[in-house]
Image 1 (tube, rainbow, N blue to C red):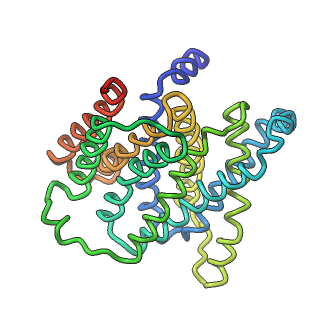
Image 2 (cartoon, rainbow, N blue to C red; image 1 turned 30 degrees about the horizontal axis):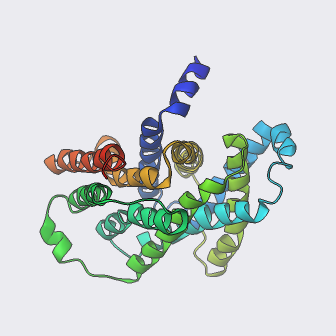
Length: 304
């Protein structure tokens, strides 16, 4: 049964990417639930420590046998894990403390455009008016959900330091997404083990800095530890593997567009888990974003 499910998932990029976005949306909810329970850099470090230990125990022989395959890729692994995972998440948490959720959502909606630009500049991907139209439609859907359907909120937004930090964070994860093109031909779980170890190593100086500044907070109760375990296994592990496989199947620019579904999933989870109210703009934004994604994926390549 498990093999049947795995075979189906491994060939279905859309489902993989939707599951990845759902997992990352859960990270948003978990972050809100953990506020005041654990400090941001501690979250970043512990999530990768848990996954690294888990994968070392699970795949110790496979990891040892993969050393030849990753020969010459050590720097790439360090950059992917350190910059793409640790730096992005760290900057995201810093930005979240210095700007509004609306600003964060809108800025994050720019990431597919950055990935597309990177694909054009570095890999000579062809872009046409249909792809750009699909990209703009999906971004408009993000604006609807983060503004809660009130565009006066968008007009009155102000730019602050947190926005600059979040914008910088986008380039790290966009670089990670584009960098997946160069991944070695090894088992995805083993690749994830190397990524998580690189992310763990690069997170240690940040935890030390947080402690030095007096902001460090270790999880001290069951709820905090359950949140950390969830963040480790769902957003950090499963969602990452699903996203990496999705990029492998359909390419970085198409996979990146699914990121605009994330804030909608986060809003829906907020309704289910946090008891927030379901509004018409949730449905409208979902339809708009999916229309943009569909236009980009289905009609973009066919348009001459």
